[in-house]
Length: 114
Image 1 (cartoon, rainbow, N blue to C red):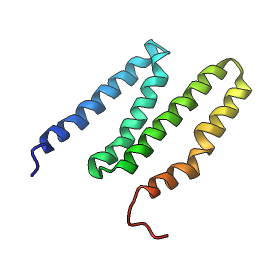
Image 2 (tube, rainbow, N blue to C red):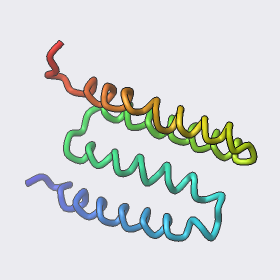
Image 3 (cartoon, helix red, strand yellow):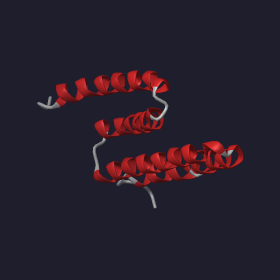
């Protein structure tokens, strides 16, 4: 057993608990909500790094975080225009990731069949 294994096993529940509490507190400060949602989503994806650490997977997770922050920021900016905001959320935060995220995750595996 590796020396850093107990630390890693402690961090996952601690981070998950902290993000869950932040998500519960986010409605009190609405400006905090997009940041907490993005952080919680990226942290959930980052759990794959604990199991399979690799640079390509790290880059994909960072890219997903950037995409999510951009998508949520666009929705926040368009919150006063319901039709534009709905179109933004559906296109950028729902339709675009459906094919892109699984493809990016597949690209992180070294032993994929091409």
